[in-house]
Length: 389
Image 1 (spheres, rainbow, N blue to C red):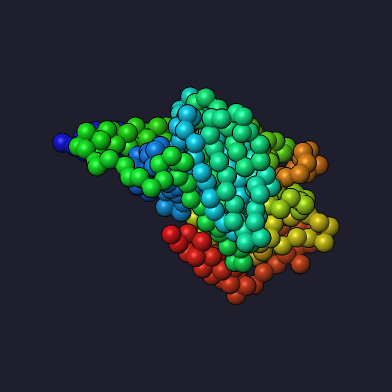
Image 2: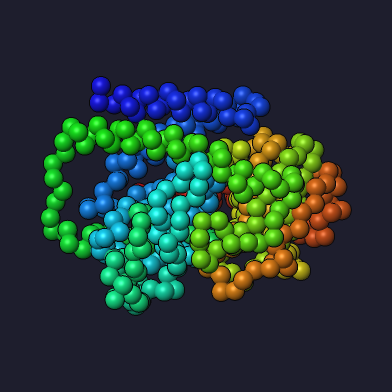
């Protein structure tokens, strides 16, 4: 059967999910199977996007194809490359807070992170008055400079991230890629052998994806004490202008974690929760993430987030959604300076009943049920509009 390699991989992938060491509850397992469904869909899409001569951008991860503690504020796109060919990327700059480009060598695997061969944001682009830009990627080192990015040996993938600070008002741009010497021609007709190969590749992508991101937290998170967060540090993976603070929580239902962090001058600052599957929690129908724009800043310039299962009645509540254990991450992007300990978070675990005394501006941070419903409605509308297409 043509699809047998992929069918075998799906069976093996279900075992990977069912045998994951962090599973404790039925909810954990059900979410694992949901994660598997999204991974199956994404793996097929990625295998069919493996077009290095006639490349196109595809969505790497999204609300239904999550992986790698995906940022709820980001749109992710990727295209495949050859390191000996030249590619042209054209587009229009939207109104989002950050647009970044990264060239990777290879792909994530259960034993290593791919090399980041170059990374930069749109401050290095020549953007016209109408928002249009053109960027070339190729092997010719004599052309290196503004508008031309040299592809180093082993360059395999171009990743683009577009990041929102205000979901309701900012709008995405456009993006297109073509190989410079192929525009105007067409790829050869599909052959059965090509399809056989792609199903096999899809199966490998699926298993690699699941195993990698079950191992990923061990590399960067789980050696940290629970209910703590790191100082700001460069985000693993070579992102040039992004810092992050990471940690994992372990809370009883009557406990809350207060995360206090200065509101930054960085164009983008955001916090999110993630499950032990190393994916974001439901950020459309629940407030499991907040940007600095969405959050309420206290008069002293601090952002105080409350992570809890029980509703604390405050605007900056991050919902656990039944996850007593999970990940928490803060990101700063489009930075113009290094971040230090003073820019990072302070963490305190308290009883939910103690919050009025522990939050110095508690009265100002309170929110009514009607206001909360408005917040959720705004998230649902914004995600639906942002993810369309």
